[in-house]
Image 1 (cartoon, rainbow over the protein chains, first blue to last red):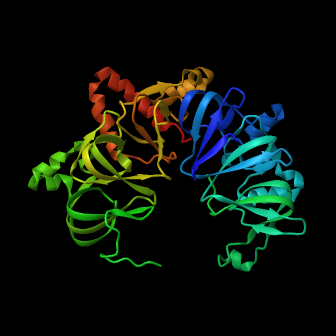
Image 2: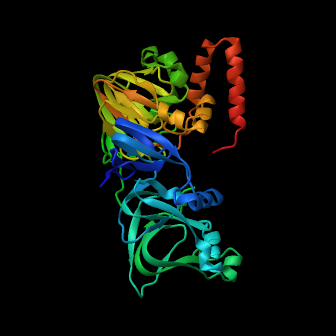
Image 3: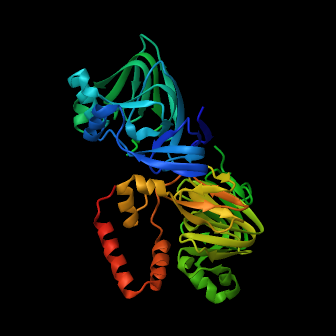
Length: 216
Length: 247
């Protein structure tokens, strides 16, 4: 467990030569011990991942934290959630929500458009873009959100509707589909404000933030 | 839903995590804009205006750069103070000293004396009394040896003044980092404040740094030390920086 929760907005990571940590640049609040930071470009996942990251803006500047010591991480007063990945199911998340993660974890960029036109529409309508970041392996991830996150269990047969702005991440074998129900009321600005929803089906967990504010 | 009255408001305590109630008898120094409500016969006067009448009190506020951002609340009553929905904490100093980011200081009793710290943007409180500070999320207390990110550093107590630590490996590893260093842009972790010795360091989750008008006046003051040629080249660099797109 490399991330210890200090308070709702700050985590403490113990870094050792065996356990380096990747973190967002500018997220270090303070440190003890002999720790150095090295800028890292792109996302890993080989050349394809690099190109994907460069093309898609699905990339935030990260840095590798190496050495021996403890480091406090936080970012712009956003809430932090720590998730432990056991290696059985990857985490899908927007790159700009990654505060820090075990350097052992692999990140790669995933094209949402592979789901056909629907994926493209979903990305465009939700402001998430056409790409998302997939985190695989065993280790801990610290995610950023407005107002903290909570986890919603999705079982086969369930349909969970999520506001696209409140969606943070998901793990497990889940289908995330955009459902639009746009009527004439929305066209004249008298809609319910919930015309677009993400319908999540399958088996896994979806993480939702208690706010409709996106990060950037 | 709890409705407060002048009698039921807490006396010298937090109303909730984000709001503090000062039981005012006499005077208090209050940051401009921090007062959200008050009961009783309380007047608010600029420190500069108040100073002419009560020179002794104004002398407690030994920082002309910050004087225009502060008011003196005087009278008898209850004054509620808050700041941007941030956590508000009260601290008691007992013959000690504490340095804090000027922007996060909300108010202090006139038994304390305020001085400008030699670290730009920070002020030092000396003496005994209560003061209020806001922080983004709860305050984290750590002990030296410790290196802190300048944006996350809220303040420090009883420590020797911090030294600036540059992460040379970072500088060497990133050419762009070097260039940013030359232009005076610090967004990464290459610049840290290093603390050694005995004391306490106060940290908050880094906030989106707001413009502090006093900091501009302070840095401008310090440029008096530059020669004409140095001032000219600094001016050119600042213009170049102002013309760069936002990141």
